[in-house]
Image (cartoon, rainbow, N blue to C red; front, side):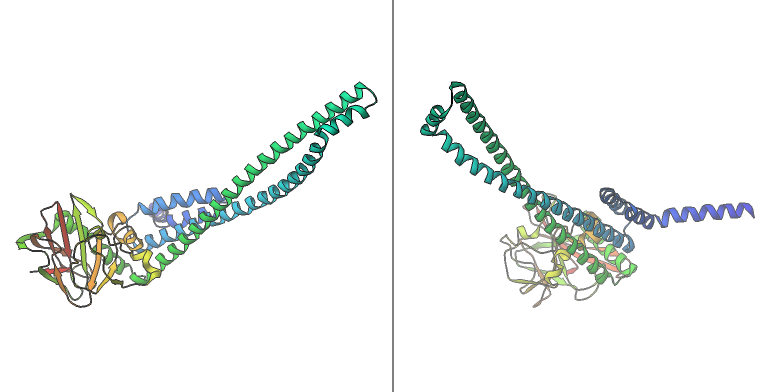
Length: 378
């Protein structure tokens, strides 16, 4: 019995260390009195959380830690601005006093230094010794004025430096506040898209990983035929399918083995986003600057942009979405953006949306491969 109780105690201790570590670490960070120590603590906590396996609770913990860290940095920056403001007020008062003193002294020194006044100093002195003393006195006043001018110039330089620092801190504060708002929006968006459900989160994660697996050559594919630019190569699946929660085309471009932003190649057109401006940071935006025609007919709706936006950081390996997710409001046809060799393939998915992730790819013969996912090749 004693051995059993001892083992039970050890088990409970291990359980606490493994499963309650995040909460203990967060409380430890909040309990630190020094703001610099709390910032360092949360930065280490973020590193620890990012190294753990992806779960919804872990992702939320990362958002919470990042939000707390940014809030601390905002408080720190605001404190620096207040302190700097006090120093600037003192410098302004010193500058005013030095400027007034120098102005008055400069006028009087100028009067004393005129030839007539110098002559008066000599003739009004009781003797030669007195004249020399008065002359030395005038020299000392002039030296004091030069020192006053030097101090005034140094104070002006310091004042300008402090004002520049204040402006820099103010810009940093605005940036930090924007980051905080974005982080809060991304957390809210994550909870909205997952409905705070771990299974839903894991399905989205599996879908993102499946897209990566396809382009890494893990899918089974077959050469279909040579195709011409603009030729229909298949249709977008009009519903949920293997590793996809709904209708959309994932379009991706590789050049020389490197993943490229499709915006470098697709021509500018009128398009819309399936989400509002408040979610641009979470789902990404697009920047069109190429000449290719689009793989689907206009009007185009963008469901997710290229790059390291909030959704990508939550679900995609490496935190980057490697293409555009898009759909057409006029046709489900998918067309070749350029001529080349067409391949059709599939990748088996499990989870909430089991089945085959169907895709096509076109080797364009110019070192570029275009990928078309979540569509039925033909």
